[in-house]
Image (cartoon, helix red, strand yellow):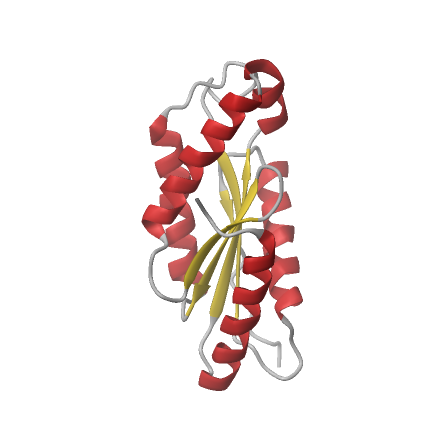
Length: 166
C-alpha cells in the first residue's frame, strides 16, 4: 500500500528540484524494522508481509501532505520524503512513527526489543543548492539510520547542521 523504490526515486528528484527552485528544505527519514529477518524466519513470510503492511499503515497516517511520500526502500526498509520540511519537524515526525509502531505492540518473540516489533530511523534534511544532490540527502539519512541501529535500535538519530567555524 505504499510507493515502490522507483516511485521514491522519481518523487525525491521532483521534490529536490522544487526545493532548489523555492529555496526550502527537503527532509528524508529512512526506517528499518528492527530484527526483521528473525521475525520472518520465526513466523513466516505471510506474517512478515502482514507486519510490513501494519508498519506502512502507521507511516502513511503520519505523512500525508501533498509533498510527503512513504515508500518501500528495501526488504524491511521504508523511506519517507518530506518536502518543505526542516530537520526539527522531520525528527518530530520520525519520533511519532517510532512511537506509533511501538504502540501497536506487534509480537516479536523471536528477537524484538521487549518482545515487540520496533523501528530504527535515520533523519536528514538539506536546503538544496547547486553543489548538492538528492544522493547526499540519502547518504546522510542512511548514516543516521546506521547510528540508530548501532546505538541500540528503536530510536531516531539525526544531526543538526553545525555552523561553519570562523
